[in-house]
Amino acid sequence: MAGGTVAAAFAPAKLNLYLHILGRRADGYHLIDSLVVFADIGDHIAARAAASLSLEIDGPEAPNLAGLGEDNLVLRAARLLAEQTGVRTGAALQLQKRMPVASGIGGGSSDAAAALRALIALWRVSIGEESLRRLGARLGADVPACLHAAPCWVGGIGEEIEPASPLPAAGILLANPRIALPTAAVFAAHRARSGDIEKFGDPGRFAPMPRDAASLAGVLSLRRNELTDAAIGCLPEIAVVLAALARLPGALLARMSGSGATCFALFADRAAAEHARARLAASEPQWWCAAGGFVAR
Image 1 (cartoon, helix red, strand yellow):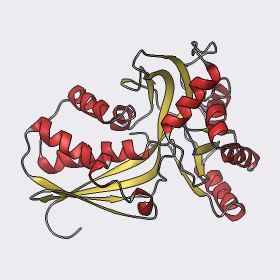
Image 2: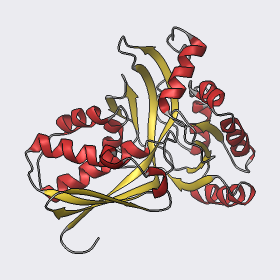
Image 3: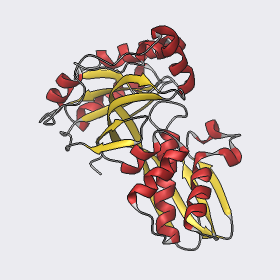
């Protein structure tokens, strides 16, 4: 992206350390309770002043976004922000796509949130936090949490955000079988399997936050991702990924994120996660995998 002032933002992978389904509204949206965190693994957005809005996509996962055109969530976010703030200039946006598409780690939502942050800086507009969150909710249920971009408890359909205490240091490994899994298909399968969804009986939120990765894995083991069985029913390869992660040396917990198909494993530190990533990449070269740590803010 050559010439002019450039504003940039990072779009981190969103992870549901646990995800409980509490019910379903009359409009079909599900009510959730989740601990959401972000990894220092993700996409990058850059924005440069221009006469009109445009989007260029590159990076290793770019081909999987081909065909979205004007419906890309980044462009929708830009148009909505311009409309709400009265901006009449454009922006040349560039998305470096590294996260797999339709994978349960909020890739599109995080890209949209990063685009909003970059454009607010580029256009020098002022918008309150609550107004920005409401704008994000119009783009998708995950966007408000991605705008927060720090550990948080998420409720409602995703619009209720409560900051969580800082997480302990830990390593994290993400793995995806490179098969897109639409969120709507998983929720539909979950409804078909469970009928009327009842409130999850086991404990949800916890305080204080555990002091180390092993303790965090321990409290998370008392919780679960309630969409896992439905997702495996739609895509049996998820069970294979979970089993492979659980077998890795040093893995403290293996779980699916969001509606899948990306799964993650927790480790004591980043070095252990990177060692596990190298081992997994050698045994399953066709999978997407990445290692890192948590984003504090």
